[in-house]
Structures are given as C-alpha cells and as structure tokens.
Image 1: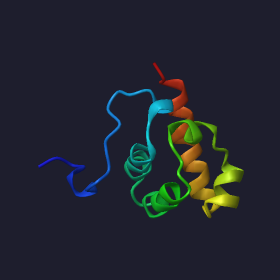
Image 2: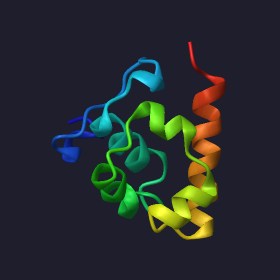
Image 3: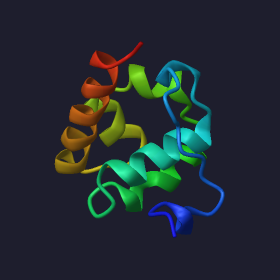
Length: 89
C-alpha cells in the first residue's frame, strides 16, 4: 500500500523541477499539499490547464478571481507555492 494510490491518474512529481510539471502533477501537488482545504479545488486547476509554469506564476488574487478559491485556501496554496519556489533545483 502506498499513501497516494487512491489518487488514480495523478502522477507524483518526484524530484522534478516544478516548472516542468504537467497539469496532472500540479493536481497531485494541490491534493497532497492540503487534502481537506485544497483537495476540493484540484479539479479547477485541471479545468484551467494550470501546469507547473503557470502554478509558479499564480497569485492569490488570480486564484480567487479565476479559480473560485476563497481567501483562506488561496493563502494556504500561496504558502505551498512559495516553498516550491525556494526549493527549486
């Protein structure tokens, strides 16, 4: 058993530069970052074709205006994206 096995078609972005992630890897990252607060919004990222490059460019205002996130989840996701930017190879 592996913790992410129920994710189905989502690919775990293992050690890859986030700017090279595809849409499915971004969806996995969102679900994994905070399954309760962000998991329900993962489909919006797929629908809007947010890949790794786009994810790194997202701001909280964009997430709220275009992806329909409330302020709380948008701020949480910004925190996770900032950590991604800092840890890039």
